[in-house]
Structures are given as C-alpha cells and as structure tokens.
Image (cartoon, rainbow, N blue to C red):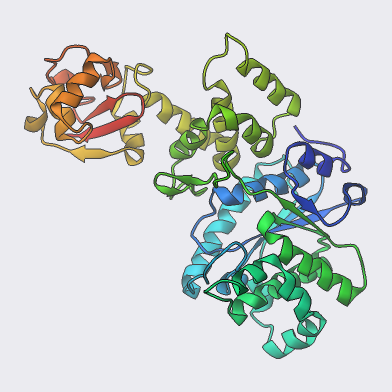
Length: 428
C-alpha cells in the first residue's frame, strides 16, 4: 500500500532498522514539505548485486511516502573508484565496459523503481553528463578552493588507507570531492536535498553537505546512511556459493534469487522481512508470533520473504517463473513433469548430456554415479535406503530400478535428485 503522509518516512525507516546515521535530527528532515532524495550506484560491474538492494529499498520508501527520488549512475565516478571500504585501489575499467554497465544498471533500476507505486516519482541520471565537460582548472576553481585538506584527511576511509601498506592514490583521495560535487550539482539543478548511502558512505555524504554549506551558505542539505546487509555473525549477506547475488536476471535467474532468500535462517528472517520488504510491521510481528507456535509450518516466513523480494526485483512475471521452477524442482511436489519445466531450470542446476543407449536399462544407482549426482554406488544405495533418491521428483525405493522409455520426460530429459537440494538434469 502507499503511505499518504510525507512526514513519517524517517520514522518508518528507523522502525525497520534502516537508519544508521543521519546528519540532522529525524524531526528536521521529517518536517520538510518535500524531500528529493538521491542514491548513487557506480557501474563497476554489469549488474547491481544484493549489497545495492538496501539502497533501492530506502529510495522506494521515500517514493511510497510521496517524495521524489534520483537514482544516480556513476558513469564518471566509476572511472575513478571509491576507496570507501576497500583495502586496495580498484583496477581501472575500460570506458566502453563502464558505459555498457551503466546502461544495464540504469535499465534494472528503472524497472525496479517503476513498480514501487502506481505513479512512481523518480528519475535515473548519469553523472558523466556533467563531468565530461568539466575541466580540471574549473574543478580546482569551483570546488577545490572550498575543500579543506584537514577535513578530507580526517575521513575514516582515508585514514584507514593511509595507515595501510597499500597507501592511497591522489585519484582515490579526490573521490570524496567528486561525490560532494554531485550532491551540489543535484541540489542546484534538481532540488535534491537528501543523499542516502551505505554506512561506509558517511564520509562522502558529509563531504557533500559541507560543500553545499560552504558554497551556497545554506543548511538545507541532509545525509542519511543505512546499515550494510549483514548476517547475525557479522559477515556480509550478499554472497552465494557461486559468488555475488546479482539483481540482473541475465546473471542470476529469478529462481536462484528466490532460493537465496528461501534459504535464510530462522534467526535472520524476521530482521530481513523488516529491512527488505514493505510488509506492515504488524504483519511481520504476526509472522514472528506464528514461528513460535507449535503448528508453524517450517519455512513459511522464508517463503514470504523470497516472494516479496523476488516480486520487488523481478516483478510478478519473475516471481511466477521462480515459483514454477521451485515446484518443478521440489521432490514429491510435481510428479507430472513436462520437458519445458525441467529445461526451464536446467541453467540453474548441474546438467549433463548422455546418449539414449547410455541411459536406457541403466540402473538408477549407476546413472546417479555416472552423472556425478553422487560420488559412489555405495553412497547412492545408502541414499536410496534413506528415502533420498528421486527420479523425476518421485522417490525411488527399489535398488534394482532401471531407466525405462516411460521415465524419459517427453523422450528428451530426466531429473535426478539426491535429497531435496542436489539435482542433476540429464538431457538425452
């Protein structure tokens, strides 16, 4: 649902654990008649990842509460590299690669924010549009003379790198001024009065509010940081076994994205429901109560989290695709499999190709070993006796089971499962 009041957005964010630091008391920001907020995304990869998700969520809350937003793609700043949170300097990216990344990320952000409300008030911009014609002499004259080196040196991200063996290049040292000028430019040209970012962006954000105060003699610019997405043990929540959890469906299917959140531990799921969904707090409290009750069905909260986030990132169509694939891959869930269902998820699980004569009349135990689903015949037999070996989602209890023509789905494909999670698609 939409929130009609413009005054409650900071309170909502605080209630949901989405505020780490703020440059003014919450009342001052909440009492503004209108907030125009921006969040930056540097195109250092071809897709945003889970670490960027909180920024999109916070932007979306401002939009839902009647404010307007700017998603700023760092086509210029991405050429420099932000040292915040980095122990070494980022490798230089090819300009063409940066442009491709920027285009891809712009499309993803636009698609996500367009679903936030029936009339979402946002724009996606690229800071290369104003930096490309800004000469060094102009920068030193218009920005550099207002910057104080002592203040710049005091930023935590700078001090940490200066104390390291790697040191800090002048290019990286200048990054905070580039981001500060972005805020100034957007403040002047777009009426942007709030910048948001992850906790590691505090130094860069306050560099912007300081620059606006020095040049324009106004206190009307604010900064707000949100916490990084961490697990309860302090490690980053954003990596899967295969690497980063990308938001682009071309790099990570909606099914794999859905599964990442479906696998969240019970100890984490309520916090993530608060931080990463738009479900009312009352509904989340109700889910939390249900989790403590004897009749609670395991993973109900995780399913809700996975559904809400997959819908947010991939839309209703992506969610439907993820749910369909989940059902197709769940042993015992869908015994009437079709070739299209299995082929649709083949890119998300291990697969192999075998000749028909290698498959027909082969025992399921031997086929499980030959395809690499299990390590040995003894492991396959042990799994079968424990009720954990499946053929096309049907549990197999007979150790002598051989593959017949009727087992090959539509004459093209097989789905083998070792337990609930380990799959092997066998194309014939």
